[in-house]
Image 1 (spheres, rainbow, N blue to C red):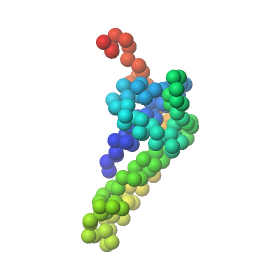
Image 2: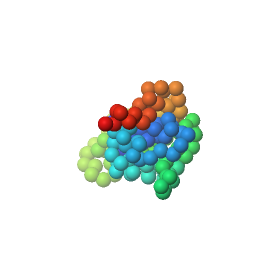
Image 3: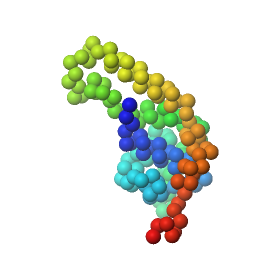
Image 4: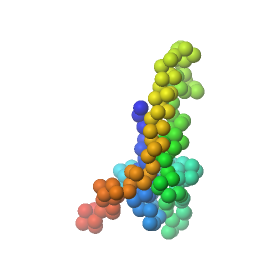
Length: 150
């Protein structure tokens, strides 16, 4: 199974916000520390806010933060919300499905079952399990010192 760039970025955003759960963070900070563009971030942030994972605040002192506690954000749920639109194989697509086996293929059912097992496993993992006590992640998400930026 391959995870889309959108979901990968979403998890980076959620983990960044989790590390900095004491304040609002900015797209610029996340882009810098998570090695992604602000335009990609904007799209994913908007979707995460629509889904109730993030709270966004516009304006000069704006930013974003988690909309709920880390222990209430199940990673499987995040994946389901963001990956549901992406077909695992051609036969799962609503359009552009030219597979002649779609009505009789047992592999399709096996793949669907495997995907559900994947999501079910991630349901047991919450954002706090990814962030809390992860000192390497905290260090990685800290701002670079001024002399490092030069």
